Image 1: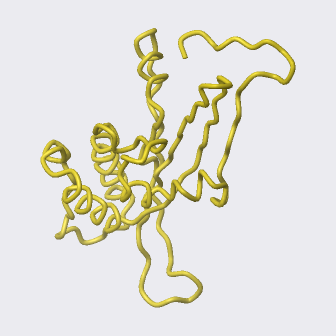
Image 2 (image 1 turned 30 degrees about the horizontal axis):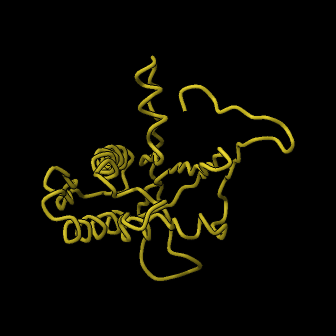
Image 3 (image 1 turned 90 degrees about the horizontal axis):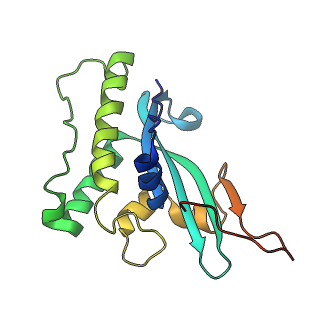
Amino acid sequence: YERRAGVASGPAAAVVENKRAFVSMVRRARVSAPPHGGRGGHYAEYEVACQLRLTALRVRAERVYRWSVWRRYSLFEGLFAAMQREYGWQMDAVQFPPPHTFVLNKLDQGFLEKRCGELDQFWQQLIVLERVADFSKHHCSSDLRSFLEVEDVLTGLFPGMEVSNTGPPSGRAWRAPEGG
């Protein structure tokens, strides 16, 4: 199951998108088997796709990191509990999806689609909290930073990560793009 980000249009949407340094979504679900003959049964994982823009103001250059991590529902649940402890009342408006204890087959395609959508709603509420996802500063959430493996991404240790650089060509005058 895969979800696609909606495409916003118009000048207001462009301004909002340009202002957010971190954009992310719970994009899809997959059913995984225990690694290399391990014990236990199959389980569901959810992909969290991320994009982080870091800007160096002195040289007016931008670096964009794109990566994704796969996480089980129980890890989202643990993150939610940790964030409640860290952010207290700010988390009151963030709704975590129910565990659906009485669902017989949690690996069913229909259930995975529903839970993926619920996790994405939770995720969108979480990442817009003030300072939570400001990974360029020390006051971001250390739990969220760890959940997304941001340190590995920024130090180049994350496999499958995509990085793009934009900046002034060497030896030439360069002007910042409009609206950025």
